Image 1: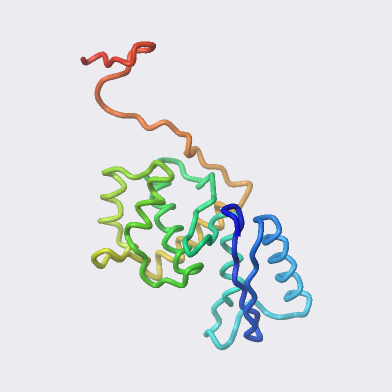
Image 2 (image 1 turned 60 degrees about the vertical axis):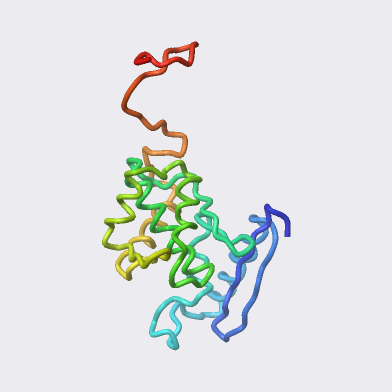
Length: 195
C-alpha cells in the first residue's frame, strides 16, 4: 500500500470479513457496491445478535468522507467540519476523532497523544482546546487515555452526518485566521508595533 491508499474492513451479516485496500475512489466504489448488494438482497441494517445495533460494515460506511484508516492510524479527511467557530470545530474534531478511532481501530480507549496530533493538524491545539478536553462532560479521561461517553458518541454520529451533508454549511474553515491579542505586525517589515 502506498501512502495514498486506504484500507476498509467490512463484516457481512453472515460473518464473512472482507478487507478492501486501494485508492480512496476504488475503495469507496467497492463499499458502495457491497452496500447496494446487501440492500437488494433484502438484508436489514440491524443485526439481532448485536441487540439491534448497526453491523460493523454499516458503521464503517458512516465514516466515508470523514475519516479513514491508514497503517494502523486514523486520519480525519474532512476539510469542512461544518462549524461556526474554532471552539465548535475543536469539539467536533475531538468527538469525531475519538469516535473514528473506536470504530476503525476498535479501540475503547484512545491515546491522548493521538487526539493532540489531530488537533494540531487542524491548527486547533491551544489553551482553549486543552480546557475543552479537560472540562467536556462527554469526554472520559483516564491518565493518558481518553474516550467518549455513550451520549457523546451519539453526538459524534450527528456531527458526522452533518459533515457528510452537502447542503449544510459552516463558517469556520481550516484556513480561517486566528486572531491573537497583543501587537499587530507592521506590513512589510515583520516588526511589531509594540516593539
